[in-house]
Structure formats: C-alpha cells, structure tokens
Image 1 (spheres, helix red, strand yellow):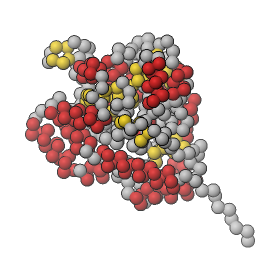
Image 2 (tube, one colour; image 1 turned 60 degrees about the vertical axis):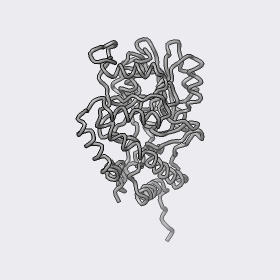
Image 3 (cartoon, one colour; image 1 turned 180 degrees about the vertical axis):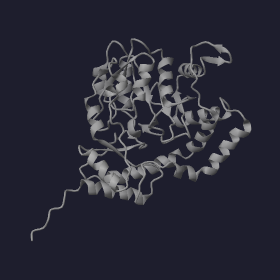
Length: 373
C-alpha cells in the first residue's frame, strides 16, 4: 500500500463544487485586489480566531515582518525565537534589522521553553515570538506573563496552528498579534500563497493594513514606506469555502493522532506530548528516535512517505553563517537529527493509518532470534 505524506486533491475533490462557485464569483465580479471576498474573509477569519481584526497579506513571512514593523522593532533590537522552527520565523526578525535570539524548546512539547526565554532576555529584547509548532500552542500563559513583566511584545507565529487552542482560546488571539500562513499544505491552505495577521489592537491592525498596501490608506497618498503584500480576491474566496470545513478537517487530524498515540505507545518511539491546557490541531505528527534515518528508510520501503520538519536548525543555516545570532540551539540541533513526521491529514483513510502503524511497529520491533534446532 502507498500512503502519501500529503494529498491535497482528496479534500479539494470533496468541496470542488463550492470552490468552482467561488472562482466564478470572483471572475464574474472582475475585481481581483482588495474587494468583497478579502473583506468577508478577514471578518470571518477574525471571528474564527476570536480576534478583533484580521488583515489578509501575501504570505505568513510577510505577516511576521509587518507585525514587527508595526511595532517599530528593528536595528539594535533583539527578538526571542525558537531554536527549532522553519527559518521564516528567524528571517522575519532579520528582515527588519533586528537580531534573532534562539531559545531551546521544552523537551516534552518542543515549543518555546518559558524558563529558557526568561534566561535569554537582555536589555535589548523587544519581543518574544513563540511558534505554535506542529499545531500545538506554546505555553502562552507563562510567555505572556514573562512579556508583561519585561514590557515586551508577544507575537504568535501561528502558521501551523489554524484552530488550535490554549486554555479554551484560539491561536491568533493569544498574543499581541499573530501571523498565519495559508500555504497549500497548512490545515487551512490556499491554492497558492497567502497569509493573515490577527490582532485585537486597532492601532496595530491599521498600521499593518497600511504597511501591506504600499504604506497607503488612501489611493496615491503614502504616509509610510510600505510594501505590496495583499491577499488577493481569488485566494480569499477559496479560503472562505475551506474555512467552513476547517473544524471537520481538524477533527479528522485529531482522530488520526489519537490512533498513532495509542497504537505506537509501546514501540520505543518518543511520541508527541500534549500540554493539558492545549488543544492541538496536529498540523504535523512528529515522532522522535535516534534511529530516525533507519525508520524513514523502512517506512519508505513499506510505501509510507515521511518528511523531516526541520533537519537544520536555523542557527546552522548557511543564511546565518557569520550573522549576529545569539542564544541556545543545542536541543534544536538534536531534534533536527531525530525527528520524523508521519502522514497525517484529512486525506488519510483508516486502512492507510493502520498501514503506517504496522510499518512503524515492524521497524521498531526487535529482530527475531532463530530457534534452537
């Protein structure tokens, strides 16, 4: 049996009729930038995230950059970031001229460790930017409290956490502002690039919106040196359709994760641990083993496609060779050598999930000893 890591065609096939209607709605209006679909999606997504405002942007990286710029974070400032994350989190800090300071994760959840964050704060620190990694929210209670004690901005990188909760509140409403990615493989993915910023701070929302539209609120009146980073009408229309299905898709991910956790508990693999205050949406299901490469090879032979998120710590990326990088990335590097992402998503059938389980169990079983003649 072949089990793909991700198959976007299956969930799209189930809602193709509604996607087609959305596409034709945009085509018939002939307005493709900053129209009714973007406005409606922003309202719907803000309500979903329990935030006052949502601003559609071109992608998740731009969302982080725009938030940092809106808070006037730049040269001479430091921003605490996870040591183990996709490099976009770090790039956003670097793009505004600030310095990323690596904070190693809690070894149980792989999210930013609040104690490590506290140790990393200096007189130059302006913000904490936790990532809700793999779809589980970071410890926002401790991180927000830490930010308040030191008068810091708390920015959520929620690119993997559409619908995730912490203490009953959704990602996107847990910090001062949050950035989402709608990359096609996300829990809520566009059919191309896209992103959004959420916040309940009206001043920051206005600033982000203005910066994303050439620094302009009024055509040809440019108050700021902005950029062109706008969610387009077509992607907004398609995202509106998919947002209506997000809870069902996340429920399917939770069911698959529950199966993996139950059926792989005795394999010796280090399985994800969930903070009891968190409600993960399982963007990824990541296991850990010192024999990661052997496990991946065995699963490949069994027809199971896996991925590694992420094999190289941002501090070790060539992009940061010689760059001013501070903090601790020791555990982040270890995770890069030991983690493996198993297939998960609404596209998986029960028999495919069981095939993944069986292949993992076979890979981790001790070798059979020959009987005595």
